[in-house]
Length: 383
Image (cartoon, helix red, strand yellow):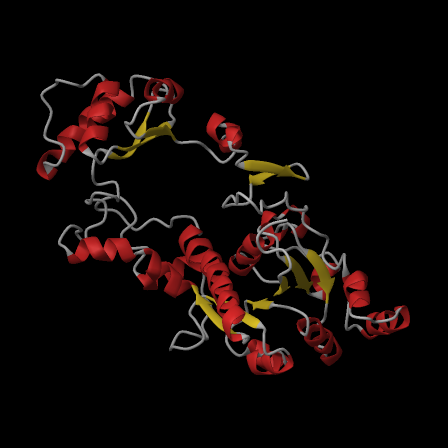
């Protein structure tokens, strides 16, 4: 049933980071009810031109359609919060307050509520009210500048660092911490999860290396940013790639054996001045075989070499299949819930709900009669 079975979450529909955090909570057993806008219920696209029913971030939820610009819709939301453990919203600072369900109102209604706020810039600061996206948040956090090749521009690492690692995952962690604290104090609180904070937090290790003089500010010249020839990717004979992460001496020795370079007069592993020579030799050798040939050669070794798989290839890899690392929901392959639990294993998530699919059922759980639900629908407060 999942370790979060019994935790009730109300999620105000938004984009990417907060839905990812709520997906994690749902995957782990929480009952998440998503509040969708009437326009979404009517069929408007979500995400970036996509459909809510094909969005893995929407899996496992129920959905209710509420018009939160209507006081009657807000009243329904507040009634839902009376029996909820968590509320998650991803508006700019002050929007929830203007709509009538800011933290003060909600915590007055339910003092045990954990109020999760997901933003890019945080709830205060000179940029708090500005628009932004992952690339902007990680830029300000110092997480974008180190990523890229030497002498070239910074390269966006998809939207993994800000939206998901520094955003939604940080939100989920903050909510769980607040729920744990509530179990001792009996009181809820606000969780301010900002992507700029989370992205900065993810760079802690690099700050440590830099502080010890082990990291240069020139991107693409360091141990973990592609500067080291033994920690990089290489093209293979078939135009695909392998990843190499042979940092430790014993792993580096295994790499040389697999490449057939053991005993060859090569520059020392940590002779940074001669890294270009070493890279050129590795590039030459890796181009002599196809990606999957190299994968077979290094399989079972400690050389830290693995094939670079595309999104469509990853679910079929033997290791991922052995661990059931991916699942199929409604014909859409996607990552399975993680982490794994020995006693309270997470169940297979439900496919994404149609926006507003559970409106009547959720309202009936509140004790509303059929006539009351029909009146709310007629007024436009629900959809």
